[in-house]
Each structure stands twice: as structure tokens, then as C-alpha cells.
Amino acid sequence: MAQEILAEMKKVFEEKFGKAETRAFFSPGRVNLIGEHTDYNGGHVFPCAISLGTYALVADRADNMTRIYSMNQEGAGIIEFEMSGLAYDRDKGWANYPMGVVKVFEDAGHKCAHGFDILIYGTLPNGSGLSSSASLEVLTAVILNDAFCFGLDMVEMVKLSQKAENTFVGVNCGIMDQFAVGMGKKDCAILLDCSTLEYRYSKLALDGASIVITNTNKPHSLASSAYNVRRAQCEHALNELKEVRPELATLGEMTNLEYDKLAGHISDHVERQRARHAVYENQRTMEAVQALEADDVQRFGELMYMSHVSLRDDYDVTGVELDTLAELAWEQEGVIGSRMTGAGFGGCTVSLVKDECIEAFKKNVEDGYEKKIGYKPSFYVANIADGTHKLN
Ligand code: GLA
Image (cartoon, rainbow, N blue to C red; front, side, top):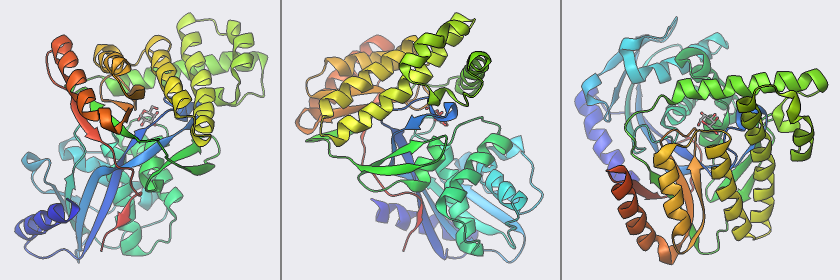
């Protein structure tokens, strides 16, 4: 598959830029198994990188311009930008992601001495919540680090990529997506403590089951504004808790019991629910990883179910499409667990499904979903992949 994609990309590169590329790169997407809306609350996440992602072919240019073309955005044509003094430019559309990375590199003292011709091709479905933007950001960081020998390690590049998304693109995301994309490891999920960035890899032994991603194919959502509202609600709840526990730095520091004792100090009942999700989901994530590592896949599945319910009832980020997919999945034979993954409001669910049941799972979920929602979902059986890297 990768070889066919690269062969096709080489042809397109030649057509668009009139020369051959000199280097190739791949950057994965990610799926989060559990630990949702915990990263910006100082909690834990448990994502993995997947083999769907973003490819780049690259050649140096002698001048300070970059010319970039995406085979997924043919209508946008070749987009050009200077390698210094960049600012967000709406007219440049998707190219703002790589531009943002160039800008944060420059601000951090890693100045790019020349530009590039770059061809991009992504296999992640658009708007699916599988982190196509983080994939492109970390990809850009690795291309720059490689070309100019900046000597940055992957965690530094992950942080710069998140900064580009926060400050240049203007989406106030946490660190999970860029971390999973950059630090992914074949056949492993990553348990990441988002307050310290301590992490460890956990080999995924799923007892004859696979990770099935189901895309709601929900057309558009107001995900980024609703996302920022959730963040603000959690921050406000934390500030009220700090009035009685001044040393508390994040919701991720609390146990469920501590939270239950202090919850009455949060004045708004909606904010109380948001904070409860953040605290309980973090504890659930740690328990889930322990269960998985003790070969208790069933318990892991139960915790996935509880995670979805909490995201539905306390965090209110699921919506009818994700709820329908999850409810249908829970009814199917051979399903160990299923929940929404990513920010929510649309996007995908992640399910652990026994291998011999995957075909029936797809058929039944597709039929039930189409009947209720009016269009079909899509399915991808995930291969757990390595993080962003140079090919050849
Ligand atoms: C999006 C954000 C992440 C994380 C998830 C929810 O994917 O980019 O930082 O907050 O939502 O878990």
C-alpha cells in the first residue's frame, strides 16, 4: 500500500514541481483507547498511532520560499509561503498547519535557511477526529529538523507542534494528539501523564481482538468552539476547588473520593459534571491500563463503556451519531468495549472486536446506523504504527 502511494506521489511531484524529490516521510494519525478530555486537565491518556496518516515528498529549494501541494486538496493548488516572518493567512487554508510549525521553529531560534517543494498525501479521512492536523504538524517538524540538523528530540518537536496549533492556528488543544503521532510505537499504546509528560509504552495484547475505528461521517460540527467551552468550564471548576484546596494544580491530581467530598464547592451544576468527568476519566484510564497489563481485557472493555457514558452524560460531547454507533456496538457479539474517541461531537468511535466477529459487526452496525441516521458509517481496522519518521 505505502509503496503504491509513494510511486503515485513521485509522478505527481515531477508534474507539479518539474524535478524529483530527494526525501520521503510518513506521519501517522492516532486513535485514543481511553482517557478523553483529560490531557488539558493534567490527567492521563492512552492513545496509539495508526497506519493511516500523512505522507510527504520533499526537495530543497535555493530560495526562501516553500511551495506545497496536497493531493487531497487539489482545488487549493500549489500554495506558496516565505520561510520567515509568517502570520496566519486564511487564504492559505490547510497550509497554515505547516506554516505555523515553521513560525514556532523560528520563534524558538531554529531558523530555516531555505524553503522546500513539498507534496502531501493523506490517508486519514478528513474531519474524522483521527488527528490529521497533528499528523501534518509533526510531519513538518520532522522535515525541518532533518533538513537543518537542529538536533531536536521528538518530545521537543511534539511540544512545538502543539504550540503551532495553539498559537498560530488558534485551537486550544492539549498535547495528546501531537504526542501520540510523534511518539507512537508499533503494536503499543502509550500511557502518558499529561502533567509531567512521563510516559511508557504498553504492548497491546488484545486476546484475538482488533481495534476497529468507526467513522460517523457526520458532515460538519462546531467542535472547536464547544471544545474551548469545555476547557473553560473545567478551569473555572478547578479555580473554585482551589479556594478550599489551594495546593491543587490540576483536576488530574484528584481521586474520585476527594472529588466527591469537595464537589459541593463548585457552584454551577454543569461545571460540577464537567469536572467529575475529568477526575473520574483520569482514574478510569489508569485502572484500564492496569487491567490490560494484567490481561484483563474484559475489564478494559467495561471501562471503555463507562468512559463513553461519562462523555455522554457528564461531559456532553457525544451527540446522536456517536451514541448510536456506541449503542449498536455494545449489542454486538464479540465486542469487548466501544466508546467515542477524540474530541467528540462527531468523528469516530473505537471498538475492540473479536477477529471472527468483525464482519458481522460491520454489517450490523452499518445497517442500524443507516436506519437511524440516514447515511452510512465507515470502518477501518487499525494497525498500530510507529511515530513520524523519514522513509527510505
Ligand atoms: C482533541 C484534542 C486533544 C484532546 C482530545 C480529547 O483531540 O486535540 O488534545 O483534548 O480532543 O481527549
